[in-house]
Length: 347
Image 1 (cartoon, rainbow, N blue to C red):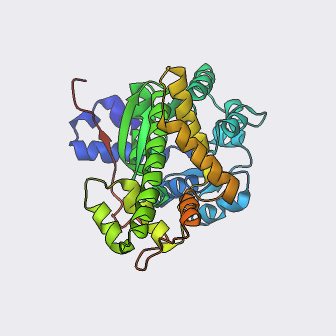
Image 2: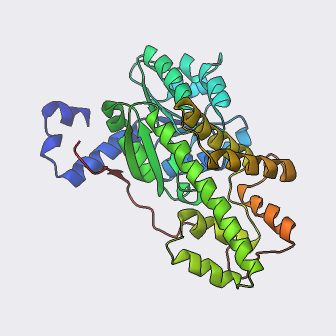
């Protein structure tokens, strides 16, 4: 591939062939993935499934075993991942954990060298990703933040959406990877912009969840059939992605969305911090935080976010369970090569 580039021949290829050549070049680059939780394991699985030379690491080796069985390599430390790989992806539960993985004695930064790429796929704080990004640049490497949105079921099929913050050069470097990991890829601007937009989307999703809970319990109290209520919400102006996915889990009773109260409180807390930094006097956001904290006190730190409906069920003595709804979300769309989403207006 590098010989073709030096000869100036790649630009004569049809666009589809150039995209395939770029993807093949990226497959030849060794990619490291650190953090194999609910989302990370599925994202890493997309790389392995699509033939990328992938090395994985997690605090618990057993979390990596299924990927190792499918052909992924294993590294004992984050530093070793960075030493072995051209691109290092982190997908971790909090800014604190990310700092430990990046800056510890056996951290990524001590294994990075010139020309390598760090992709942060965690949901994190704008200031923190900028701070660590500056340390990555000091190594001569390229930082990019690439948080995802769309749920574990879409991460599992490579159909999730990805926001990418960083300079355009770095965005182009990671595009073959991000269009494998996700369906829709949006370049949001400089480093920090993707994290800012990501916590905004999680705030909106949380607000949607709480309004869906209130709508379902109120319709139950009014004597409405729950399956009919679900369809009325779905085909109306009141629908949302959260309703069409999580309301099904609520009605089934499984309520396992693979996302927990401690994580959502971290994310909506980050959104509230952005508002406070910019002197925006939010009214709903503090109420939402209080409701989710109360749910955590009642049902546990690691309770699934959809368990929040129980506050209203317990207060009313009603149940919104209904037959015919799935216990888990499955993405039934075929896996497709991703593409860049370009916002309207002048570029």
